[in-house]
Length: 225
Length: 318
Image (cartoon, rainbow over all chains, first blue to last red; front, side):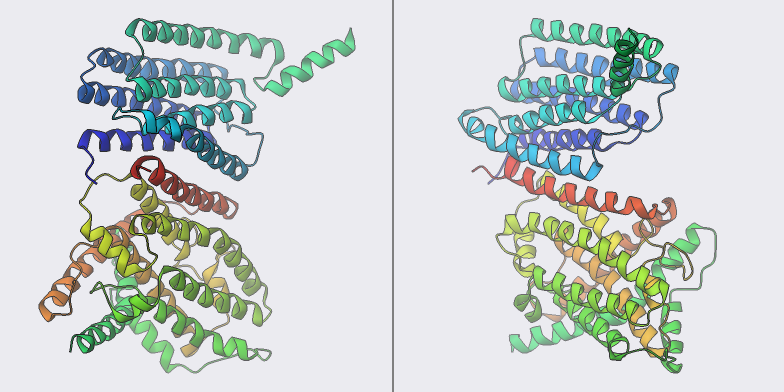
Protein backbone atom coordinates (compact mmCIF):
# COMPACT_ATOMS: atom_id res chain seq x y z
CA UNK A 1 0.00 0.00 0.00
CA UNK A 2 1.57 3.26 -1.11
CA UNK A 3 0.44 6.38 0.70
CA UNK A 4 1.19 9.83 -0.69
CA UNK A 5 3.93 11.79 1.01
CA UNK A 6 1.55 14.55 2.13
CA UNK A 7 -0.67 12.01 3.85
CA UNK A 8 2.34 10.41 5.52
CA UNK A 9 3.36 13.84 6.74
CA UNK A 10 -0.13 14.59 8.06
CA UNK A 11 -0.29 11.21 9.78
CA UNK A 12 3.11 11.82 11.34
CA UNK A 13 1.99 15.24 12.57
CA UNK A 14 -1.16 13.68 14.02
CA UNK A 15 0.94 11.12 15.88
CA UNK A 16 3.10 13.96 17.22
CA UNK A 17 -0.06 15.77 18.30
CA UNK A 18 -1.13 12.71 20.28
CA UNK A 19 2.34 12.49 21.81
CA UNK A 20 2.22 16.16 22.84
CA UNK A 21 -1.19 15.62 24.46
CA UNK A 22 0.25 12.76 26.50
CA UNK A 23 3.32 14.81 27.35
CA UNK A 24 1.14 17.69 28.57
CA UNK A 25 -0.63 15.25 30.84
CA UNK A 26 2.61 13.81 32.23
CA UNK A 27 4.45 17.03 33.08
CA UNK A 28 5.42 17.91 36.63
CA UNK A 29 6.58 21.49 36.21
CA UNK A 30 4.58 24.55 35.25
CA UNK A 31 7.25 25.72 32.82
CA UNK A 32 7.44 22.43 30.94
CA UNK A 33 3.64 22.37 30.73
CA UNK A 34 3.87 25.73 28.96
CA UNK A 35 6.65 24.49 26.65
CA UNK A 36 4.55 21.54 25.56
CA UNK A 37 1.52 23.80 25.17
CA UNK A 38 3.52 26.08 22.88
CA UNK A 39 4.74 23.03 20.97
CA UNK A 40 1.13 21.99 20.48
CA UNK A 41 0.32 25.40 18.99
CA UNK A 42 3.27 25.29 16.61
CA UNK A 43 2.40 21.72 15.60
CA UNK A 44 -1.14 22.85 14.91
CA UNK A 45 0.01 25.62 12.60
CA UNK A 46 2.36 23.28 10.74
CA UNK A 47 -0.48 20.81 10.25
CA UNK A 48 -2.75 23.54 8.97
CA UNK A 49 -0.06 24.70 6.53
CA UNK A 50 0.57 21.18 5.24
CA UNK A 51 -3.15 20.53 4.78
CA UNK A 52 -3.52 23.91 3.06
CA UNK A 53 -0.69 23.06 0.66
CA UNK A 54 -1.87 19.55 -0.14
CA UNK A 55 -5.61 20.21 -0.40
CA UNK A 56 -5.46 23.66 -1.99
CA UNK A 57 -7.58 25.38 0.65
CA UNK A 58 -5.78 28.70 0.66
CA UNK A 59 -7.63 30.19 3.59
CA UNK A 60 -6.04 27.53 5.79
CA UNK A 61 -2.74 29.41 5.38
CA UNK A 62 -4.34 32.28 7.27
CA UNK A 63 -5.43 29.86 10.00
CA UNK A 64 -1.90 28.44 10.12
CA UNK A 65 -0.38 31.88 10.55
CA UNK A 66 -2.98 32.73 13.19
CA UNK A 67 -2.37 29.47 15.06
CA UNK A 68 1.36 30.08 15.04
CA UNK A 69 1.18 33.64 16.30
CA UNK A 70 -1.64 33.16 18.76
CA UNK A 71 -1.32 29.59 20.04
CA UNK A 72 2.37 29.07 19.51
CA UNK A 73 3.63 32.43 20.77
CA UNK A 74 1.15 34.83 22.33
CA UNK A 75 -0.87 32.58 24.65
CA UNK A 76 2.16 30.70 26.08
CA UNK A 77 3.90 34.04 26.59
CA UNK A 78 0.86 35.49 28.40
CA UNK A 79 0.66 32.44 30.66
CA UNK A 80 4.40 32.52 31.23
CA UNK A 81 4.13 36.13 32.36
CA UNK A 82 1.34 35.20 34.74
CA UNK A 83 3.23 32.30 36.34
CA UNK A 84 6.33 34.43 36.65
CA UNK A 85 4.46 37.21 38.40
CA UNK A 86 2.55 34.82 40.63
CA UNK A 87 5.63 32.65 41.38
CA UNK A 88 3.82 29.40 40.78
CA UNK A 89 6.46 27.62 38.68
CA UNK A 90 6.76 24.99 41.38
CA UNK A 91 5.72 21.49 40.61
CA UNK A 92 2.17 20.82 39.53
CA UNK A 93 0.38 18.46 41.86
CA UNK A 94 -1.95 16.09 40.07
CA UNK A 95 -4.92 14.64 41.90
CA UNK A 96 -4.04 11.10 40.91
CA UNK A 97 -0.90 9.06 40.67
CA UNK A 98 0.82 9.76 37.37
CA UNK A 99 0.86 6.12 36.25
CA UNK A 100 -2.90 5.81 36.88
CA UNK A 101 -3.54 8.97 34.86
CA UNK A 102 -1.47 7.56 32.02
CA UNK A 103 -3.39 4.27 31.99
CA UNK A 104 -6.65 6.22 32.03
CA UNK A 105 -5.34 8.30 29.13
CA UNK A 106 -4.53 5.18 27.13
CA UNK A 107 -8.03 3.83 27.77
CA UNK A 108 -9.50 7.16 26.62
CA UNK A 109 -7.46 7.05 23.42
CA UNK A 110 -8.72 3.55 22.68
CA UNK A 111 -12.27 4.68 23.39
CA UNK A 112 -11.93 7.64 21.02
CA UNK A 113 -10.59 5.37 18.31
CA UNK A 114 -13.42 2.91 18.82
CA UNK A 115 -16.07 5.62 18.59
CA UNK A 116 -14.66 7.67 15.73
CA UNK A 117 -13.33 4.91 13.52
CA UNK A 118 -16.69 4.14 11.80
CA UNK A 119 -17.03 7.84 10.94
CA UNK A 120 -13.52 7.93 9.51
CA UNK A 121 -14.46 5.23 7.06
CA UNK A 122 -17.17 7.40 5.54
CA UNK A 123 -14.86 10.33 4.92
CA UNK A 124 -13.06 10.69 1.60
CA UNK A 125 -10.60 13.33 2.77
CA UNK A 126 -6.88 12.76 2.94
CA UNK A 127 -6.93 13.84 6.56
CA UNK A 128 -9.57 11.34 7.72
CA UNK A 129 -7.10 9.30 9.79
CA UNK A 130 -6.49 12.24 12.08
CA UNK A 131 -10.09 12.49 13.27
CA UNK A 132 -9.84 9.84 15.96
CA UNK A 133 -6.54 11.29 17.16
CA UNK A 134 -8.08 14.76 17.37
CA UNK A 135 -10.98 13.39 19.40
CA UNK A 136 -8.56 11.57 21.67
CA UNK A 137 -6.65 14.86 22.13
CA UNK A 138 -9.86 16.68 23.12
CA UNK A 139 -10.64 14.02 25.73
CA UNK A 140 -7.04 13.98 26.99
CA UNK A 141 -7.08 17.75 27.45
CA UNK A 142 -10.34 17.37 29.39
CA UNK A 143 -8.66 14.72 31.53
CA UNK A 144 -5.90 17.23 32.19
CA UNK A 145 -8.47 19.79 33.38
CA UNK A 146 -9.99 17.19 35.67
CA UNK A 147 -6.84 15.81 37.25
CA UNK A 148 -5.08 19.06 38.10
CA UNK A 149 -5.48 21.13 41.22
CA UNK A 150 -4.07 24.46 40.13
CA UNK A 151 -6.24 26.91 38.24
CA UNK A 152 -3.47 27.70 35.74
CA UNK A 153 -3.00 24.10 34.60
CA UNK A 154 -6.75 23.79 34.28
CA UNK A 155 -6.73 26.80 31.99
CA UNK A 156 -3.91 25.27 29.95
CA UNK A 157 -6.09 22.18 29.70
CA UNK A 158 -8.98 24.33 28.48
CA UNK A 159 -6.79 25.97 25.84
CA UNK A 160 -5.53 22.54 24.82
CA UNK A 161 -9.16 21.46 24.29
CA UNK A 162 -9.56 24.41 21.93
CA UNK A 163 -6.32 23.46 20.10
CA UNK A 164 -7.55 19.89 19.67
CA UNK A 165 -10.93 21.07 18.41
CA UNK A 166 -9.15 23.18 15.81
CA UNK A 167 -7.13 20.12 14.88
CA UNK A 168 -10.34 18.08 14.63
CA UNK A 169 -11.83 20.73 12.33
CA UNK A 170 -8.83 20.53 10.03
CA UNK A 171 -9.07 16.76 9.97
CA UNK A 172 -12.82 16.44 9.53
CA UNK A 173 -13.65 19.24 7.10
CA UNK A 174 -10.31 20.81 6.16
CA UNK A 175 -10.94 23.75 8.43
CA UNK A 176 -13.85 25.91 9.44
CA UNK A 177 -14.85 29.04 7.50
CA UNK A 178 -12.22 31.69 8.06
CA UNK A 179 -14.61 34.13 9.70
CA UNK A 180 -15.61 31.53 12.31
CA UNK A 181 -11.99 30.71 12.96
CA UNK A 182 -11.02 34.34 13.47
CA UNK A 183 -13.95 34.73 15.82
CA UNK A 184 -12.93 31.70 17.89
CA UNK A 185 -9.30 32.81 17.95
CA UNK A 186 -10.26 36.19 19.36
CA UNK A 187 -12.60 34.57 21.87
CA UNK A 188 -9.76 32.41 23.08
CA UNK A 189 -7.40 35.37 23.26
CA UNK A 190 -9.89 37.38 25.28
CA UNK A 191 -10.58 34.37 27.48
CA UNK A 192 -6.87 33.98 28.15
CA UNK A 193 -6.55 37.66 29.02
CA UNK A 194 -9.52 37.46 31.36
CA UNK A 195 -8.13 34.29 32.94
CA UNK A 196 -4.87 36.13 33.45
CA UNK A 197 -6.65 38.88 35.37
CA UNK A 198 -8.68 36.28 37.25
CA UNK A 199 -5.57 34.47 38.45
CA UNK A 200 -4.43 37.62 40.23
CA UNK A 201 -7.90 38.17 41.71
CA UNK A 202 -8.14 34.54 42.84
CA UNK A 203 -4.76 34.78 44.49
CA UNK A 204 -5.62 38.03 46.21
CA UNK A 205 -8.88 36.62 47.56
CA UNK A 206 -7.88 33.08 48.51
CA UNK A 207 -4.06 33.28 48.86
CA UNK A 208 -3.78 30.23 46.64
CA UNK A 209 -4.39 29.07 43.11
CA UNK A 210 -5.55 25.62 44.13
CA UNK A 211 -9.16 24.95 43.44
CA UNK A 212 -9.59 22.95 46.66
CA UNK A 213 -8.29 25.88 48.67
CA UNK A 214 -10.95 28.14 47.15
CA UNK A 215 -13.69 25.79 48.20
CA UNK A 216 -12.21 25.39 51.67
CA UNK A 217 -12.00 29.14 52.04
CA UNK A 218 -15.64 29.57 51.03
CA UNK A 219 -16.71 26.87 53.49
CA UNK A 220 -14.78 28.65 56.24
CA UNK A 221 -16.58 31.88 55.45
CA UNK A 222 -19.93 30.13 55.60
CA UNK A 223 -19.04 28.76 59.01
CA UNK A 224 -18.08 32.16 60.27
CA UNK A 225 -21.26 33.87 59.15
CA UNK B 1 25.02 -27.70 1.32
CA UNK B 2 23.07 -24.55 2.04
CA UNK B 3 21.94 -26.02 5.36
CA UNK B 4 25.56 -26.63 6.33
CA UNK B 5 26.44 -23.12 5.24
CA UNK B 6 23.66 -21.51 7.27
CA UNK B 7 24.56 -23.61 10.31
CA UNK B 8 28.17 -22.52 10.04
CA UNK B 9 27.13 -18.88 9.69
CA UNK B 10 24.95 -19.35 12.78
CA UNK B 11 27.89 -20.78 14.75
CA UNK B 12 30.25 -18.07 13.52
CA UNK B 13 27.73 -15.40 14.45
CA UNK B 14 27.12 -16.80 17.95
CA UNK B 15 30.85 -17.10 18.68
CA UNK B 16 31.51 -13.64 17.26
CA UNK B 17 28.74 -12.12 19.39
CA UNK B 18 30.08 -13.71 22.58
CA UNK B 19 33.70 -12.83 21.87
CA UNK B 20 32.99 -9.27 20.79
CA UNK B 21 30.76 -8.50 23.79
CA UNK B 22 33.62 -7.51 26.17
CA UNK B 23 35.14 -5.38 23.41
CA UNK B 24 31.83 -3.58 23.01
CA UNK B 25 31.66 -2.86 26.73
CA UNK B 26 35.25 -1.63 26.59
CA UNK B 27 34.40 0.55 23.60
CA UNK B 28 31.52 2.21 25.44
CA UNK B 29 33.59 2.92 28.53
CA UNK B 30 36.49 4.26 26.44
CA UNK B 31 34.12 6.58 24.58
CA UNK B 32 32.71 7.72 27.90
CA UNK B 33 36.20 8.31 29.27
CA UNK B 34 37.18 10.39 26.24
CA UNK B 35 33.99 12.42 26.54
CA UNK B 36 34.88 13.15 30.15
CA UNK B 37 38.46 14.18 29.23
CA UNK B 38 39.99 11.01 30.63
CA UNK B 39 42.22 8.60 28.76
CA UNK B 40 40.29 5.50 29.81
CA UNK B 41 41.60 2.00 30.30
CA UNK B 42 41.38 1.03 26.65
CA UNK B 43 39.03 -1.10 24.62
CA UNK B 44 40.65 -4.37 25.72
CA UNK B 45 40.27 -3.75 29.44
CA UNK B 46 37.14 -5.93 29.93
CA UNK B 47 39.02 -8.79 28.26
CA UNK B 48 41.94 -8.38 30.66
CA UNK B 49 39.50 -8.26 33.59
CA UNK B 50 37.83 -11.46 32.46
CA UNK B 51 41.18 -13.24 32.02
CA UNK B 52 42.29 -12.20 35.47
CA UNK B 53 39.00 -13.28 37.04
CA UNK B 54 39.09 -16.68 35.35
CA UNK B 55 42.56 -17.29 36.76
CA UNK B 56 41.60 -16.41 40.32
CA UNK B 57 40.21 -18.87 42.82
CA UNK B 58 36.55 -18.78 43.82
CA UNK B 59 35.79 -17.61 47.33
CA UNK B 60 32.36 -18.58 48.53
CA UNK B 61 30.36 -17.77 51.60
CA UNK B 62 29.90 -20.56 54.11
CA UNK B 63 26.13 -20.70 53.66
CA UNK B 64 26.08 -20.59 49.89
CA UNK B 65 23.76 -23.24 48.47
CA UNK B 66 23.89 -24.96 45.09
CA UNK B 67 21.81 -22.14 43.60
CA UNK B 68 24.63 -19.72 44.24
CA UNK B 69 27.15 -22.04 42.58
CA UNK B 70 25.01 -22.89 39.56
CA UNK B 71 23.54 -19.45 38.89
CA UNK B 72 26.54 -18.06 36.95
CA UNK B 73 26.48 -20.97 34.53
CA UNK B 74 22.72 -20.75 34.03
CA UNK B 75 22.80 -16.98 33.58
CA UNK B 76 25.68 -17.17 31.13
CA UNK B 77 24.14 -20.02 29.11
CA UNK B 78 20.69 -18.45 28.95
CA UNK B 79 22.11 -15.09 27.85
CA UNK B 80 24.32 -16.80 25.27
CA UNK B 81 21.35 -18.75 23.92
CA UNK B 82 19.33 -15.55 23.70
CA UNK B 83 22.20 -13.85 21.88
CA UNK B 84 22.47 -16.62 19.31
CA UNK B 85 18.74 -16.36 18.57
CA UNK B 86 19.13 -12.75 17.38
CA UNK B 87 20.19 -12.63 13.73
CA UNK B 88 23.20 -10.36 13.41
CA UNK B 89 24.77 -11.32 10.09
CA UNK B 90 22.18 -13.32 8.18
CA UNK B 91 18.40 -13.10 8.08
CA UNK B 92 17.34 -16.74 8.29
CA UNK B 93 19.72 -18.38 10.71
CA UNK B 94 18.50 -21.79 11.92
CA UNK B 95 18.11 -20.76 15.57
CA UNK B 96 16.21 -17.60 14.75
CA UNK B 97 13.71 -19.71 12.85
CA UNK B 98 13.09 -21.96 15.86
CA UNK B 99 12.79 -19.31 18.56
CA UNK B 100 10.76 -16.13 18.28
CA UNK B 101 10.89 -12.89 20.24
CA UNK B 102 8.78 -14.25 23.08
CA UNK B 103 11.25 -17.11 23.57
CA UNK B 104 14.03 -14.53 23.55
CA UNK B 105 12.38 -12.49 26.29
CA UNK B 106 11.74 -15.72 28.23
CA UNK B 107 15.41 -16.69 28.04
CA UNK B 108 16.39 -13.28 29.36
CA UNK B 109 13.77 -13.64 32.10
CA UNK B 110 15.25 -17.03 33.06
CA UNK B 111 18.70 -15.46 33.37
CA UNK B 112 17.28 -12.65 35.47
CA UNK B 113 15.36 -15.06 37.71
CA UNK B 114 18.52 -16.96 38.62
CA UNK B 115 20.49 -13.75 39.01
CA UNK B 116 17.92 -12.52 41.54
CA UNK B 117 17.85 -15.89 43.33
CA UNK B 118 21.63 -15.89 43.60
CA UNK B 119 21.49 -12.35 44.94
CA UNK B 120 19.21 -13.48 47.76
CA UNK B 121 20.92 -16.81 48.40
CA UNK B 122 23.73 -15.62 50.65
CA UNK B 123 21.41 -13.47 52.71
CA UNK B 124 23.39 -10.23 52.69
CA UNK B 125 21.41 -7.02 52.78
CA UNK B 126 22.77 -5.72 49.47
CA UNK B 127 21.98 -8.89 47.55
CA UNK B 128 18.36 -8.97 48.67
CA UNK B 129 17.94 -5.26 48.01
CA UNK B 130 19.37 -5.53 44.53
CA UNK B 131 17.23 -8.58 43.76
CA UNK B 132 14.01 -6.95 44.90
CA UNK B 133 14.75 -3.82 42.89
CA UNK B 134 15.66 -5.80 39.81
CA UNK B 135 12.43 -7.79 39.97
CA UNK B 136 10.31 -4.67 40.58
CA UNK B 137 11.75 -2.86 37.61
CA UNK B 138 11.75 -5.86 35.32
CA UNK B 139 8.05 -6.41 36.02
CA UNK B 140 7.52 -2.97 34.48
CA UNK B 141 10.16 -3.18 31.77
CA UNK B 142 9.20 -6.55 30.32
CA UNK B 143 5.63 -5.69 29.24
CA UNK B 144 6.91 -2.46 27.70
CA UNK B 145 9.56 -4.34 25.76
CA UNK B 146 7.11 -6.94 24.49
CA UNK B 147 4.63 -4.21 23.62
CA UNK B 148 7.15 -2.30 21.52
CA UNK B 149 8.18 -5.47 19.72
CA UNK B 150 4.51 -6.27 19.08
CA UNK B 151 4.16 -2.97 17.23
CA UNK B 152 6.57 -4.30 14.65
CA UNK B 153 5.15 -7.78 14.62
CA UNK B 154 1.70 -6.34 13.90
CA UNK B 155 2.98 -5.16 10.54
CA UNK B 156 4.85 -8.37 9.83
CA UNK B 157 2.06 -10.64 11.20
CA UNK B 158 4.65 -12.67 13.07
CA UNK B 159 6.74 -12.59 16.23
CA UNK B 160 9.56 -14.38 14.48
CA UNK B 161 12.61 -12.15 14.11
CA UNK B 162 13.47 -13.49 10.66
CA UNK B 163 9.99 -12.76 9.32
CA UNK B 164 9.99 -9.34 10.93
CA UNK B 165 13.35 -8.41 9.39
CA UNK B 166 12.23 -9.66 5.99
CA UNK B 167 9.06 -7.59 6.28
CA UNK B 168 11.05 -4.43 7.10
CA UNK B 169 13.44 -5.09 4.22
CA UNK B 170 10.63 -5.66 1.74
CA UNK B 171 8.33 -2.75 2.53
CA UNK B 172 9.06 0.62 0.92
CA UNK B 173 10.55 3.16 3.29
CA UNK B 174 7.93 5.59 4.54
CA UNK B 175 7.10 7.56 7.61
CA UNK B 176 5.51 5.25 10.14
CA UNK B 177 4.72 7.01 13.41
CA UNK B 178 4.05 3.71 15.15
CA UNK B 179 7.59 2.53 14.48
CA UNK B 180 9.03 5.79 15.74
CA UNK B 181 7.09 5.31 18.98
CA UNK B 182 8.25 1.71 19.23
CA UNK B 183 11.86 2.78 18.66
CA UNK B 184 11.71 5.39 21.41
CA UNK B 185 10.18 2.89 23.83
CA UNK B 186 12.69 0.21 22.90
CA UNK B 187 15.66 2.54 23.42
CA UNK B 188 14.34 3.50 26.86
CA UNK B 189 13.85 -0.16 27.77
CA UNK B 190 17.29 -1.13 26.46
CA UNK B 191 18.86 1.51 28.71
CA UNK B 192 16.92 0.20 31.69
CA UNK B 193 17.48 -3.50 31.03
CA UNK B 194 21.22 -3.08 30.71
CA UNK B 195 21.51 -1.01 33.86
CA UNK B 196 22.71 2.05 31.98
CA UNK B 197 22.88 5.51 33.45
CA UNK B 198 19.42 6.93 33.91
CA UNK B 199 18.54 3.75 35.82
CA UNK B 200 21.71 2.22 37.19
CA UNK B 201 25.39 3.09 36.98
CA UNK B 202 27.41 0.26 35.40
CA UNK B 203 30.73 1.62 36.68
CA UNK B 204 30.02 1.65 40.37
CA UNK B 205 30.47 -1.13 42.87
CA UNK B 206 29.51 0.68 46.01
CA UNK B 207 26.45 2.83 45.89
CA UNK B 208 23.23 2.61 47.84
CA UNK B 209 21.08 2.76 44.74
CA UNK B 210 22.90 0.16 42.67
CA UNK B 211 20.84 -2.68 41.25
CA UNK B 212 22.83 -5.04 39.08
CA UNK B 213 26.12 -4.77 40.96
CA UNK B 214 24.36 -5.29 44.28
CA UNK B 215 23.40 -8.81 43.26
CA UNK B 216 26.96 -9.64 42.19
CA UNK B 217 28.68 -8.36 45.32
CA UNK B 218 29.29 -11.85 46.76
CA UNK B 219 30.70 -13.36 43.59
CA UNK B 220 34.37 -13.83 42.87
CA UNK B 221 36.70 -15.63 40.49
CA UNK B 222 35.27 -17.37 37.47
CA UNK B 223 31.71 -17.00 38.74
CA UNK B 224 32.05 -13.22 38.69
CA UNK B 225 33.71 -13.43 35.27
CA UNK B 226 30.75 -15.37 33.87
CA UNK B 227 28.24 -12.96 35.38
CA UNK B 228 30.04 -9.91 34.00
CA UNK B 229 30.47 -11.54 30.65
CA UNK B 230 26.75 -12.35 30.57
CA UNK B 231 25.84 -8.71 31.20
CA UNK B 232 28.22 -7.63 28.43
CA UNK B 233 26.58 -10.10 26.07
CA UNK B 234 23.21 -8.71 27.08
CA UNK B 235 24.33 -5.21 26.07
CA UNK B 236 25.42 -6.31 22.61
CA UNK B 237 22.26 -8.43 22.31
CA UNK B 238 20.03 -5.43 22.87
CA UNK B 239 22.09 -3.33 20.46
CA UNK B 240 21.78 -6.04 17.81
CA UNK B 241 18.07 -6.37 18.48
CA UNK B 242 17.59 -2.62 17.99
CA UNK B 243 19.58 -2.75 14.75
CA UNK B 244 17.62 -5.79 13.56
CA UNK B 245 14.21 -4.37 14.28
CA UNK B 246 14.66 -0.80 13.12
CA UNK B 247 17.59 -0.57 10.67
CA UNK B 248 18.18 -4.06 9.27
CA UNK B 249 19.48 -2.82 5.90
CA UNK B 250 22.79 -4.44 5.02
CA UNK B 251 22.13 -7.80 6.66
CA UNK B 252 22.95 -10.81 4.43
CA UNK B 253 20.02 -12.64 2.88
CA UNK B 254 21.92 -15.81 1.96
CA UNK B 255 24.85 -17.71 3.36
CA UNK B 256 27.46 -16.69 0.80
CA UNK B 257 30.84 -15.57 2.18
CA UNK B 258 30.97 -12.16 0.50
CA UNK B 259 27.51 -11.17 1.73
CA UNK B 260 28.26 -12.34 5.26
CA UNK B 261 31.52 -10.36 5.42
CA UNK B 262 29.74 -7.27 4.11
CA UNK B 263 26.92 -7.80 6.63
CA UNK B 264 29.55 -8.13 9.36
CA UNK B 265 31.05 -4.76 8.38
CA UNK B 266 27.61 -3.14 8.31
CA UNK B 267 26.66 -4.67 11.65
CA UNK B 268 29.87 -3.54 13.37
CA UNK B 269 29.45 -0.05 11.96
CA UNK B 270 25.86 0.19 13.20
CA UNK B 271 26.87 -1.12 16.62
CA UNK B 272 29.68 1.43 16.81
CA UNK B 273 27.29 4.28 16.01
CA UNK B 274 24.81 2.99 18.58
CA UNK B 275 27.47 2.69 21.29
CA UNK B 276 28.85 6.17 20.63
CA UNK B 277 25.29 7.47 21.03
CA UNK B 278 24.98 5.46 24.24
CA UNK B 279 28.20 6.97 25.58
CA UNK B 280 26.97 10.46 24.67
CA UNK B 281 23.64 9.85 26.38
CA UNK B 282 25.28 8.45 29.48
CA UNK B 283 27.65 11.39 29.73
CA UNK B 284 24.90 13.92 29.23
CA UNK B 285 22.36 12.49 31.64
CA UNK B 286 22.22 12.24 35.38
CA UNK B 287 20.98 9.17 37.17
CA UNK B 288 17.31 9.16 38.05
CA UNK B 289 16.18 8.93 41.62
CA UNK B 290 15.28 5.34 42.38
CA UNK B 291 11.62 6.21 42.93
CA UNK B 292 11.41 7.91 39.57
CA UNK B 293 12.39 4.74 37.74
CA UNK B 294 8.86 3.28 37.68
CA UNK B 295 7.70 6.53 36.09
CA UNK B 296 10.42 6.26 33.45
CA UNK B 297 9.41 2.69 32.71
CA UNK B 298 5.71 3.52 32.58
CA UNK B 299 6.56 6.30 30.12
CA UNK B 300 8.24 3.67 27.96
CA UNK B 301 5.13 1.51 28.24
CA UNK B 302 2.89 4.42 27.27
CA UNK B 303 5.08 5.15 24.24
CA UNK B 304 4.96 1.52 23.13
CA UNK B 305 1.19 1.45 23.59
CA UNK B 306 0.85 4.67 21.59
CA UNK B 307 2.81 2.93 18.85
CA UNK B 308 0.31 0.10 18.96
CA UNK B 309 -2.68 2.47 18.81
CA UNK B 310 -1.25 4.68 16.07
CA UNK B 311 -0.54 1.58 14.04
CA UNK B 312 -4.28 0.94 13.93
CA UNK B 313 -5.28 4.59 13.76
CA UNK B 314 -3.01 5.70 10.97
CA UNK B 315 -1.45 2.80 9.15
CA UNK B 316 -4.01 0.06 8.82
CA UNK B 317 -6.94 1.01 6.62
CA UNK B 318 -9.37 -1.46 8.17
